[in-house]
Length: 62
Image 1 (cartoon, helix red, strand yellow):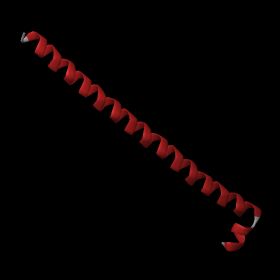
Image 2 (image 1 turned 90 degrees about the horizontal axis):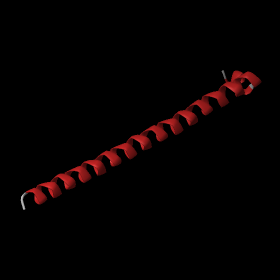
Image 3 (image 1 turned 30 degrees about the vertical axis):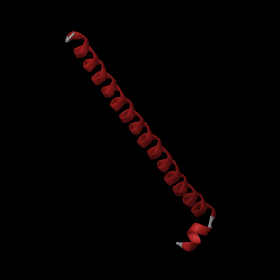
């Protein structure tokens, strides 16, 4: 196995595996950060909707 990794084909295999792990890490990081951003936007939207409802109730009670 060691001799295979030290040959040309084995080196290419090792580089391919490392590239696979690196790209998988960056894609996962991008997806998780996008989901976090969407959750922040949803919570801000909910806060604004709640504030608008409270304001309309306050205007309606006058």
